[in-house]
Length: 285
Image (cartoon, rainbow, N blue to C red; front, side):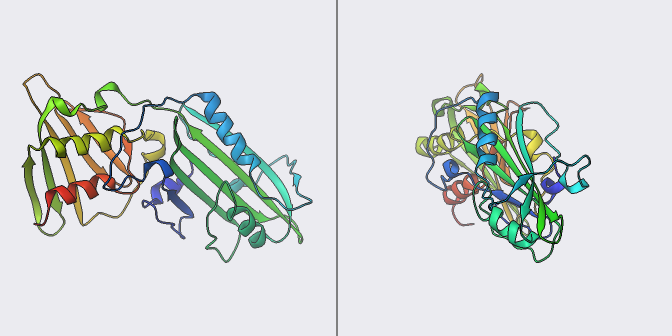
């Protein structure tokens, strides 16, 4: 996958990297968690998604497929190198100057991103977390450069992942836990922890986590973000000695989750919902 993933900061458009991490519509829970049904996608669904994305391109009259023996380097797609992804692409010769073409294509579906560039060639990428139930991530790549004095060469790519599935261990039954411990880590003031035994608090965290979609490792493995000023980790304490010990922590648009010390697939949290709930429960201090 393109190197933009190393430049991603959650929900922020990075002009220097030409990358954006977009928030999923279905994931905007904030401090009001909700439980969603577990939906497993398929290759057919992912393939249909990327084909539809390419069909949505807003193109002026006179656009033609480009039949080039050798593509410029920036036009060569770099699909995710793991299984579980479907892809589609279009290489086009489009009437018009590169910036005008970029503005038209970027401003409409499937990209729908503002243009922040003043020069070309341009290569940009957008990562969509959980774009629809059953799909865990989508990547939309766009590259433009001048082809002639009156036309622009465009490379448009879409990739969608339907893997991984969430493990059964990740789905939390609040009745199995007697308490949650929240650890607040402040960059300048160190760590504080508080334990809560309220069934309502336990259920609130469990409902939020149960409603998250899995984040493919191939989509998030290279992501990096500025260090946060405050972070929260949440530990679920089992009601009896045989129950699971579950730990979670959020960072860079995702949630790391472990069950009895075994890491599980990461979960999307592009709107910072886990930290928002933990902050509200933890209170001042």
